[in-house]
Length: 330
Image (cartoon, rainbow, N blue to C red; front, top):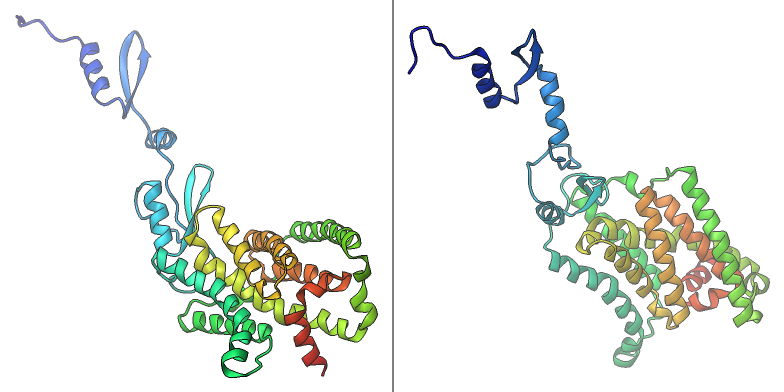
């Protein structure tokens, strides 16, 4: 029972206050009496930042609120984006910067569309001449390059019609010098291996094309990069990345792109064409992903293609490019 002269010690009062508001007050000792001083606002915010969980940043700069990693990946997939983890921050970035909103396509529909474009079209080009000859009595020939250019043009026009095309994406050329050095150094190693393999397997084919038809070889050297490589770059790098890469998780997107690029050469009916182009897909697509430069990826593609034609491997790739070059040469 308290008397009239009894009172609660100040240290008890301040202990209660400190326990209830420890986030705003710090304890100091002065003259043997516990006193409290209000913690500065900047100190509180700095300490709270240390314990806060990392936020998820979005490419558009607008944070949509806290959500699980699975939710971020699902929303990114629906928006045509690929999630990317940088350190402890989960980011979702556009496969390539696009004008307007990316196309929203359900995952299964996107995969079916991918299969029809990248597998159905080569099969149609492979069997159409034989079917036309058998059922219609018409010789179609191999319309590989015209079909490739037509499809690439249709794709670009469709993206432009939907407001999702930036011309700079198709003509981007900026890339760090180290990327150009990497491409050239890797090409030198691969060219030596290809020359060695051909000399071992078919030494009679070495340098046969430029020696037997130098003018025709020169036409191929010019037409192949400008026409064939440019169209393939649109379909198998630019369009694949912006529309279909997000449908495949992780590194499966690289494998899907390389398989699609290789299967486009099934019309040549030999395993060497499929093997070389599959390896090329594993090289060219990552180059484009790292740099975003269509010129660098196409230049790398053209280097390998022109070298294959020159050194003697071109006999496995005749039907499309050389028929086009023959038409150009008259």
